[in-house]
Length: 194
Image (cartoon, rainbow, N blue to C red; front, side):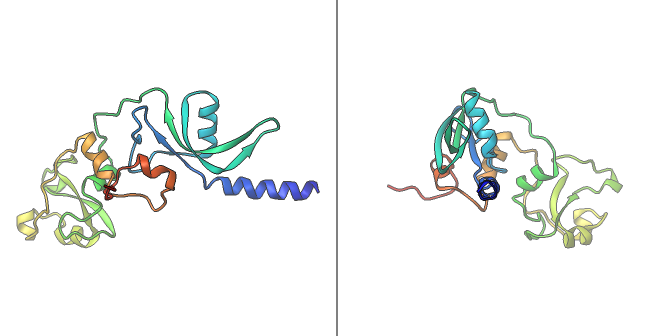
């Protein structure tokens, strides 16, 4: 009988990895949309136990200790407000997010890399205003040439995004999995009921 219990427990533990908790700031907005601010169920339970969050919604499944049975949190709200960063880090991910994960020359969405508009060989620097997302094909076609020399044009001029602009851009890319308990707290471009 002990081995049956152990086997069941191990199966449940693995299954519980599939119960992420949506983390909301104290203003009930996600800390980030892309990537979506999620914690593992263990982190959510620990934060609730330490009284750092309020549980807003729960899964039907439970976890047990010798003395307690707890429903797994699906949405938690931080008790203390975390001030969003105003400065946006210049990273490959943020660059792709700014450019909506599409080539700024042809619009392709696969095999993305980045391109210096003014090539580094011609004094171009690595900055928000000079780097764009580009598919491999366009990047090779442009090479170390200027836009005029390559005959290529940009879909939009590159510029540094604001933090709020980047957060809003992330709302255009919902993840593959959204639990129904999260939907009231996520505001993707969905039609609202009248």
